[in-house]
Image (cartoon, rainbow, N blue to C red; front, side, top):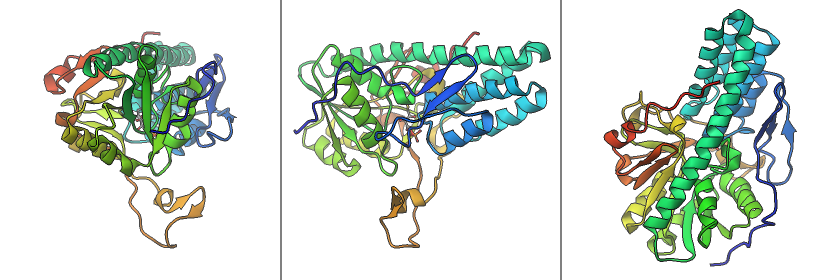
Length: 358
Ligand code: MRU
């Protein structure tokens, strides 16, 4: 297949977020790949808006950004009222990724436990601890996932891996989840990546292709609808994706289009892997039917870059995520190990998640 050769392997690792102890900088992912523009949100409201409009995105990354946003807010205006209002605003800025609530709940708890005099410092410390925890979790799960892929696809070089959306450094505190696994595998084996463009907001085209280019990993972009046909024709060895919320039974919500890839992988008998930190597991949700699926503005479907692609007035549905049933998932890869088969017993063995300790 025709493959982009990738970019300069020496490019520094992508970073989505910077924190200097007081100031938060967020790479505006809506402007990539054309422009690298860093936002400097003043507080929780601006962080929440950045999350809503997907300037900041990716499940672990929005948790980290929200944690810093909450810490900044109570630093600027310490007090219980500020803490509760900012926590609520950030927690509800997007509904599907559990990492968001996971992170701001921890910052709130640390701030409350510290008491009024140390509230702001405790919130900042907890946000930094969450960031460091996600960074380390990312490294661990990437190593585990690369090892599993080597075992599941033993004979072939290059290994042909298909992925969806963006799950690299831009989406996490560290090197990534699914895309981080692919990058780790590429350090040991020749890899070719098929990156789905990921309609409607093109995270695969704009962000994954950008990251793969920087990493120097050969890749080709395809429209989402091409994936099943290529899988059926034997052109893919494994599929690996990230996750926004994993229910207690292993049913997994991820970017819309993921379920179709899982069906195709299952029909072709190739591995379908989900990779993510345990902060993406929600032990309080029994199965995928109960996961809230974000419905976004219909205009994201009827327009591309501000120009209409459908007759004016056309109705559109825009669910941002779908749920892949556990039975279609070969393995769930986390920093605490691999659930395989994916079922309540094996997922339950990975939770409760480790608490970031400031
Ligand atoms: O709407 P997005 O771009 O935030 O969706 C992101 C995804 O669906 C990712 O696959 C998921 O968050 C995992 S990121 C490691």
